[in-house]
Length: 158
Image 1 (cartoon, one colour):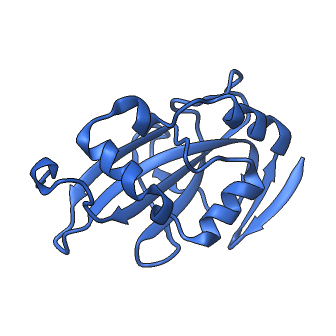
Image 2 (cartoon, rainbow, N blue to C red):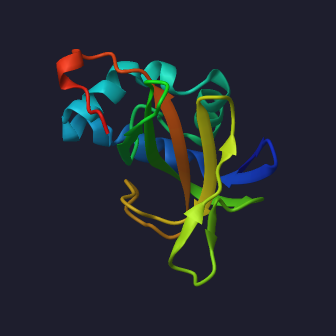
Image 3 (cartoon, rainbow, N blue to C red):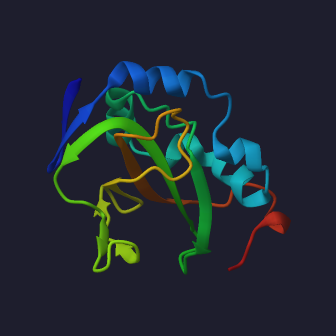
């Protein structure tokens, strides 16, 4: 197990298991979906995450091109599109849990801003994981703003 310190979190990661799991995945969920919103995300994926987050993912063994799930939430008033998504790594974390709940099931997310376009959070969850064993997974939640780069006729307005 490796220890990664990122901002106010201490992340304990089984790097080898995480890296091997992502290496066995052919496509991220956006490639498998192929809807216009996902194709737009793919077109700007390289710029969707700042170097700080790409470095973190590398330290965790996570391939940022293979998200477990991604979806376009809405078009911001500035014209950018807000996407949300998830990744996982095998391990644990100490620090703020991004899922805020009063009943253990329903809640909201309190993400940490990385810059004006990206926020991130960690929680113990295993929704749509690539891992064969979902025990001991940390779910990495993210939100990112990307421009519409595909043909404007394909752009969602909502």
